[in-house]
Image (cartoon, rainbow, N blue to C red; front, side, top):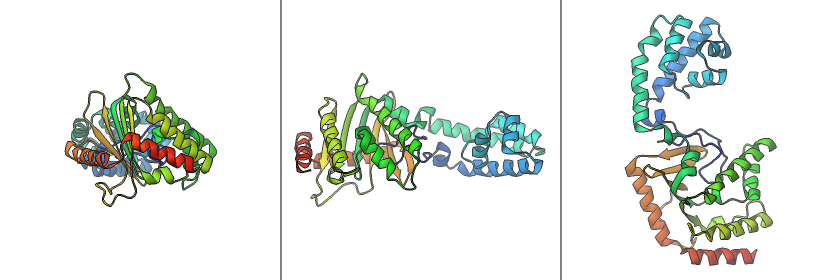
Length: 300
């Protein structure tokens, strides 16, 4: 199950954009070990031949970063690369011998996880439905510029100013989803603590609450608050997103400590969808939630 490298997005939580590559189809299908082992073999053969990653990359038509990714098993060593490498590195047929297994693994990945699964940002931009549960901070699509900047500025390890500004811009660009047509159906369930945590200070927090009120007025958006006083809760497993890409089945997205995961298996998605439905039933209604947000804004 995946999510791709989230181009300019973190699923909406308060974590860093593009901070970590999402789980790949190879990882989900158990073929990672094959590509890691092949990568190690190529690295040893390359070093034995006395070639740098840049030199080897020029010979096979890839840059040094791509070669590094292949040798670490992060990027698939394609059959044509293995065939060239076998000759260039004097592997004696060793790399050619595993080409059928690599082709089988690649076919398995393509069958289970089509290419469109590999970019969360792309899925989000074209989704017909988007649903978010947040228990820690305001989701990315709802964040103000100052709130987003405060999030990135205080994360650990620290980011330089250029990176912070790029990530803020990336996050804000995702909010164009609210202005496209046809508009998607969007809903949020926010834990009450999200409304109380003054990220960025009082002024930034107040503007963020106003942003919630503004977006909540949109015809296609519903924002509900889960009161902290509830004595039971159907989901203690953390934040998640649910989205329905145009022309495809619903998927779920989670991220824990910077490790993103796009969940595509129908039964797993169903369970998360069920929990979300229960939470919406337990949460305050959109109108009640609006009144609570207005109250908290007045109390600042």
